Amino acid sequence: MQKLPSSLYTPESVRRIDHKAIQDHGISGYTLMRRAGKAVLDVLSRNYPQTKRILVLCGAGNNAGDGYVIARLAQQRGLDVKVVSLTDPEKLQGDARQAYLQWHETAVLSVNDVALINDADVVVDALLGTGLTREVEGSWLNWIDAVNYSAKAVISVDVPSGLDALTGSIKGAAISADITVTFIALKVGLFTASGKACCGEVIFDSLDVPESVYESELPAAELLISPEYFHLPKRRHDSHKGLYGHVLVIGGNDGMPGAVILAARAALRSGAAMVTVVTRVEHIAAVAAACPEAMVYGSVNGDLPELCVERISVVAIGPGLGRDAWAHRLLTQAIALDRPMVLDADALNLIAENNLHITPAHIITPHPGEAARLLYCHKASDIQLDRLAAIKQLYDLMKGVVVLKGSGTLIYDGDKLRVCSLGNPAMAVAGMGDVLTGVIAGFVAQGLNLNEAATLGVCVHARAGDLAAAGDTYGMVASELIDMIRRVINA
Image (cartoon, rainbow, N blue to C red; front, side, top):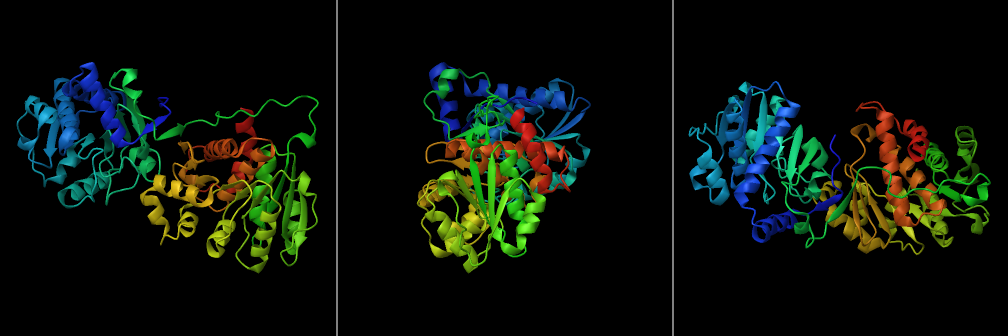
């Protein structure tokens, strides 16, 4: 699998980079289009070498131009090529029109005949590019649905049609590609929200534009493709437990002892030397049995037991916390400890419901539903429409490091935005967030700053999930991931 660049750009930035390559370096737009077409066809030949028949779906603009170049080159290589245009190709302009005119097979087939998909070995999606701004409808919607229903191999050109290349949201409907070949620079929307689900494998081709064209555009985000971003120092042989921190985990309300157990075990596996759990009195035995390495205390009415605050490195609160008076009292007392905090789950819901102000340095780890409550949105889907805007609003609200969980988890510290490309759908189960809370808290306890701990924690958690899933998409449970954390860190 190709190693991707780490810089992610907005579609508007990519257009400016493209323009700069043309204007400042004398590379014609049609030269870039020919290179793009060849790049897609090379990917098709390499990944589907038995292909004999392809169907190229062309829309409008340069994305359609890429499609016509692909069709011409494929025919030159001896493939049986059919082209469908969803717009009048005679109205194409500029480089796209030149590409259409050089497609010497003048027949462009009926826009209504979706049955053409059945005869193709591979479908090339060149319908809608990065300029999409409105919902997909009409014949565009019909073709996208038909392609997805067909289960044919699909290669998307630059971006799957219907996917917003900035936000990763779907504009009504989007192609579910097996491979997306994207050009010039990586677009941030390909890696978060619905981006990963729509793109399949992302293959990048710079089209040989000079490195200097990127200098005037700042990336919108950094793509995290490995846990190897902030290395934990190798431990000295004369190490002792006083060097590696103490995590206080608070939560586990009635019926939810498993949440604090997962967080405590994850904190220990991430390298924290000591963990103390505060939970319901009724859960002491369960926590002690499941995690004998942790110290565990019970709270009857929401009061924290007497602890040596100076020995607490970080407070992780939220897993299984609940929203009753017991939970609220524990949260307010935890804030008063004035130690770094990792806030998750019901801690975030209590903050939203009670307009609590978090004074200690902190990391918040909301999923889209919790983010919506913090921002007083109606529902999680509002967050998913523009995760980049949402995480910046969360930072403005909370003034702490924000981890917005989900496919393509985002991390933002007020300065740099990062997108994690690791993880898999088997991780969409209860308890995964509790494990992440413990991992991040464990790294804070060991001395990483909050941004480093959040970034490394997200990557280690996701990579451990990939190892535990081993390619499966069903049936994994959160506790399976915990034993992989040690392997990922020590690798």
